[in-house]
View: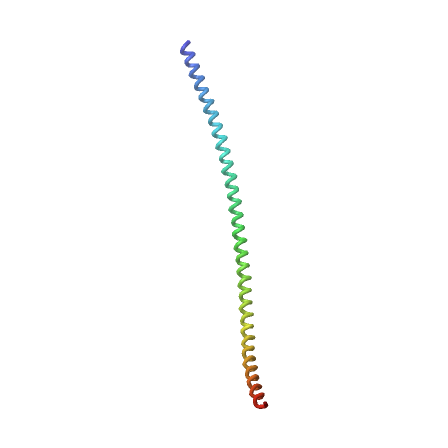
Length: 114
């Protein structure tokens, strides 16, 4: 009877050990599934962030290009206006010289008359 008792204790230990292993296996499987879900959510978020950053980059490049084109057009307009102003100022220099000549002539005429 001792051998029956010993063998039933041994069988009971094996069953208990098996159930403990099965329970541990189920817990590990559940935790693994939870971790996989977290990784999947993180990867989806990373994908969305990557797509969003790509859109921001593309929009930034478009805006920079537009701003540069506008700046170039403004600079060209400024250069053109400066050239026109320079031409007009050259005309004023000629006119100023002519006025000085007339003033000298008037001064000489006034000296002769008075």
